[in-house]
Image (cartoon, rainbow, N blue to C red; front, side, top):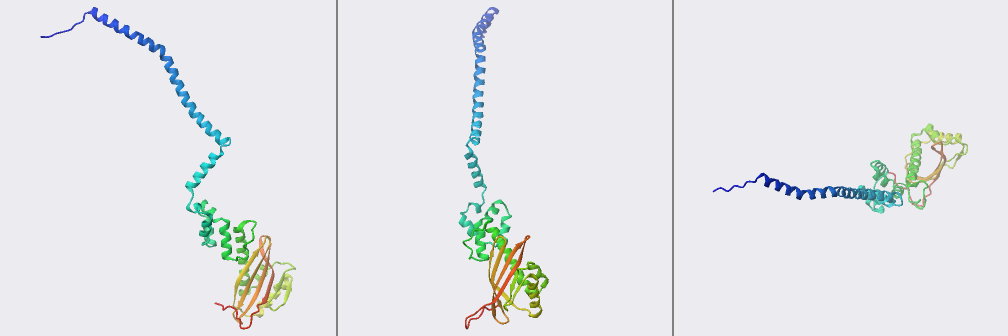
Length: 282
């Protein structure tokens, strides 16, 4: 048995009319409220954008107007993150570590990178190296250009003073003449007690010494240097192997036209107590 439902044209029209009657108020309401919905959505986006802009503007204002602490904190954070192990050590520990390096190693360390350069240029490190390589007598001085510059100047003087004795061993009168300042006030006191004044007489005295004296084997010990801006002096002891004697020596240098020149040499015999002998030469 089959049951079928059919709608006549009249009934179909009645259902369509009812549907339209129900939907018409809905569409009318939607058309009425649509502008308000668009406006509300637009205002919401503007508030979000304003919040972002205001936050950025506030951050910029704090950085520009008294908010420099933000930049300082950020810089410190970056430095801490990128700091090397050497930089994070306590300064006293850093100085102690660097004290095991010699002059060349410390200079090489300063050329590796910026962090090592700051560590290798530490004034206390160069002061420690100075006392290790030269003398502790000058612990109380305060070099105007720092201990690194003072170390370099002292090293230059010590090298020139060492060259003075090399010239004596080589018996080179030409190089001896280049080492002395050509001035009338230079003086040289030899171990014999003879005093010579003026460049010409001083160089002539060395010529006589080189001509008459045989080659002498000697060693220099207890070298101590003091460097000023344009003057330096070096004291030391010379031990002579041939007759087991010793000399107290002093060299004075002056700085002229970018070079150090010898202006005074003094040599005197070292006095020993009875039974006392100078150190054995190696």
